Length: 311
Ligand SMILES: [Zn+2]
Image 1 (cartoon, protein in one colour):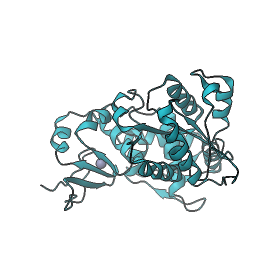
Image 2 (cartoon, rainbow, N blue to C red):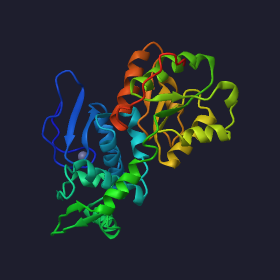
Image 3 (cartoon, protein in one colour):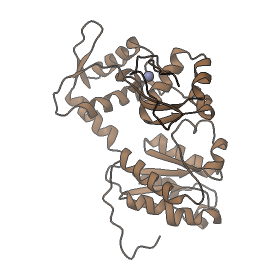
Image 4 (cartoon, rainbow, N blue to C red):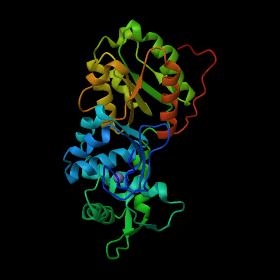
């Protein structure tokens, strides 16, 4: 396999090589997109598709949020349809990123090219527009030099960050949205709820009789009370789509899962989220992935299961 020395997504120079012995593809570490993989056979197809600067920026931004993602022939089209988050969402993403990179209040951060992907920016001008916005809101102060930025988070920025992250920060509850089918009972009892407990949270699923495929006040109240939502799309129930969308609208983190043979049926808008697939017979792996994802995104919770607690 030939070495590649340019990122197939954003065209930035990357370390030559990238392929390793047993893997038929490339492990890419791009200064802009971060780490991802592309299967060898998918590379020519990927290169053949004309990608506008906007599409490149969207894929690059999305890969940053879904590190170590593998691009293969079947998901190329999906990557082309990733939507650009709103301007304000992107500015929030940048502010959160600055916080992550800041080790003490008052620290100066110097521009690097990963900022472009964090903000889903087409180019430096677009990034500068977002930096201007954050500066005007007094969330940051910018010390612009020619073709560069050096920023620092200001007190109003720290307050905004608290607001962004404090959506039900004290809640230990995970609302589980899924299909009420007998075939799914053990998936909830033995896999999903156990994985949520393992991550230090309390799973909450409304009762089958209560739910009856209608969204009532109790469900809305329980979602509002939750720290995050886990939505399994197997069976493609309207209620699951509604509950996940409602939670997303509130600003809650939503984790998406689906039985592998039904992933292709996922609604177009959902497919751009990094869905955890599962296969019957390989549930332990699924359970571990859920726990890991929750811990990576939200952090380990403090909920201790009562020994008397039934599922
Ligand atoms: Zn790249």
